[in-house]
Length: 110
Image (cartoon, rainbow, N blue to C red; front, side):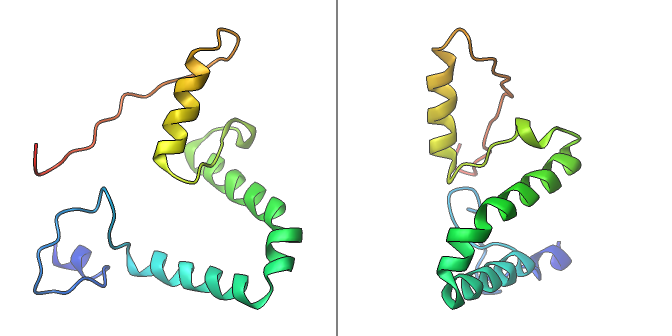
């Protein structure tokens, strides 16, 4: 557990139990976020206006390879609430095929 705990920037004197709602991400993820933020700040028009479509396609392809899925079958959402909203709305359309995976968030409070 100690090796896993070292991946986070959390105060070592605090026992942090809530990674589900919000909170720290592993150091490599945090460092990648900083790199992307810097890239955005340096050239926002280049990144968001010209490169984002290709970058998102690359990310979908990488995720598809990891999941053994087709990139065209994957969609990114800004957050889980939006994803669930789109899913629920599509359940009301009989012509829209939709695969559901049961999901449960474990909470120390339940």
